[in-house]
Length: 379
Image 1 (cartoon, helix red, strand yellow):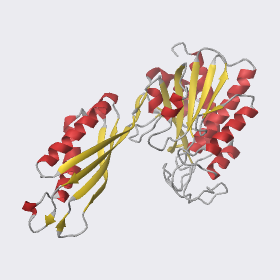
Image 2 (cartoon, one colour; image 1 turned 30 degrees about the vertical axis):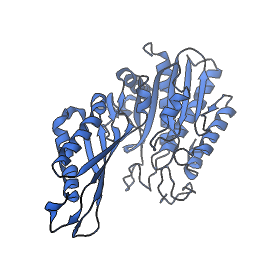
Image 3 (cartoon, helix red, strand yellow; image 1 turned 90 degrees about the horizontal axis):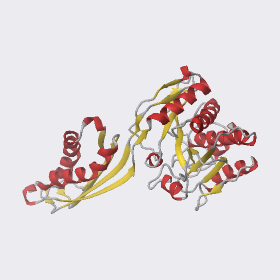
Image 4 (cartoon, helix red, strand yellow; image 1 turned 180 degrees about the vertical axis):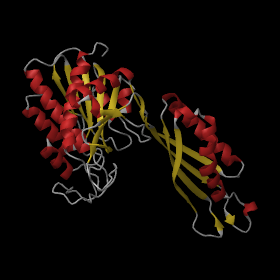
C-alpha cells in the first residue's frame, strides 16, 4: 500500500483528469477478483464487494492540487506544478487497501452485507465530483456512508471524530460595482467606487454577523479587491470577491439572499450600481450522530479507544457533504503528523507530506467501520 501511495503521489492528476489514477485503482480491484465500474468520464471508480440488500459506502477522493511539489523525496511529483498536497493519495490508498481486505472477507463468506467503494474525482474543484458519483448510482441502495481525511495536526496513530457540524459550507461571492468616474478632486460629481467597495468589504460582513444567529457559524471574508490604477482618478468599475463559510445547514440555505440584499443596501447610498454573483460551493458536512458513534466505536476496536480523540470543527469545505444530503454518514480525521518533525505541516502546502504508517491505521479503521455499520441495525 505504501508503494501504491508513492506511485500516486509521484503521478498526480488535477480535478477532472484522474484517468490514470482511476485506471490504477480499477486494475488493483480486478486483480483481487472484484468487478469495478468506471464513472461515465472514466476518471472515477465504483465497486461493490459482497452481497445483500444492505449497502454501506466508503468514499475516497482522487485529485491533486495545482501546486509545485517542493519536497526532496524519492516519490516527489513528476508533474510540474501539480502535487497531492491534501492527502488524497493517502485517502485513495486507504480505501483501496480496505477494499482488498474486505474482498478477502467476502471470499470467506465473512462479510455480512455489501460494501461499496466510491473513488471520486474533483473534490478540489467547483463543480465538484460528488454529484457525478451520485448521478452514476453511487448511492443507490446505500444506507450509510463513511470517509476519512488526512489531518497533519494529529500525530500518526490517532483519529479525530465529531458528531454534528464537522466542516463548513463554502460559497463564493463576487461583487461588481459600476458608476460615473472622474477626478479625485471632485468626488461629489462621481460615484466613488473605491469608497463604495470599502463599504462593502467592511460593512457587509459586520452586518451579516448581526443578522444571523452566531451559533450558525457564518464567516464572510474577502480575498480580492480591485479598482482603478491612478491615484487621482476615480474608476468606473471595481470588484471584490469573498468566500462565505457556514456550519449550519438552515443558515446556509438563507445566506445567499441575505448577503445579496445587504450588499445592495450598503451600496445604495453611494451612487454606484452593484451586481452580485453568488455561487454555491459545497454544503456543510454535518456528521450523523449514530454514524459517528459507529465509526468511533470501530476506530476504537481497530486502534484502541485511547487513540480516538475529539476532532475540531473546520471552516474548510468538503464535498463529502453532498453524500450526507442524501444518506446518513460521518467523516473522521486521520492523524498523519510525523512525530518529532520540526516542520509543522498543513494541507494545501507545497511541502505537505505524511507519516505513511497512517495508511495502515486508516485501512484498519475503514474495514472495522464497514463491518460495524453492516452489523448495526439502524443502517
